[in-house]
Amino acid sequence: MAEYTLNTPLTDADIEQLRSGDVVYITGTIYTGRDAAHKRLTDTLDKGDPLPFDLKGALIYYVGPSPAPPGRPIGSAGPTTSYRMDTYAPRLHGLGLKGTIGKGRRSPEVREAMNATKSAYFGATGGAGALLSQAIKAAKVIAYEDLGPEAIRELTVEKFPLLVINDCHGGELYTTPDLEKALAG
Image 1 (tube, rainbow, N blue to C red):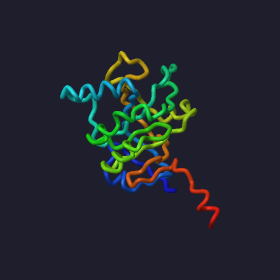
Image 2 (cartoon, rainbow, N blue to C red):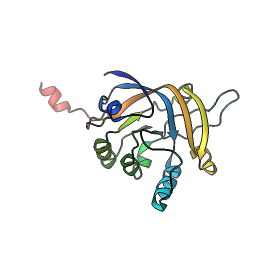
Image 3 (cartoon, helix red, strand yellow):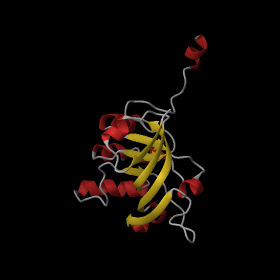
């Protein structure tokens, strides 16, 4: 397990060095988006209209943050379950998205898309939304404000802590160990 500090936008070289289980600290800009926002993004693409942010090298964090308390840019910002975005993720990876952040496993189609496009899936610690929000230095809604917590936000983060779940080489942290093989020696 290695540890990396990366700045956005991410490059192919940034992603190629990562292996599942590595710890990564992200500094720069990440975008938020959940189910409803992803539906709108794909509807926008279907119409041939431009997206509200550039996908090249971008990271999307699957989160619906709580309202910001006084003096803070954002409230609790813990990850949501990622498989709900699996229908949309391969298309976005094909357009330059370099990574997604959430919790839980990804579908075979998403893992295949990440391998083909040199992108990765990062895990954020579920249940630690208040702690994760400490790494968010600024937040603003950039699209779909009517979706409330599910609107797309641009977050400025500093050393946002993540774990590589799926790397672009086919590695997966959630792989079930082969206990029979291990016990056989």
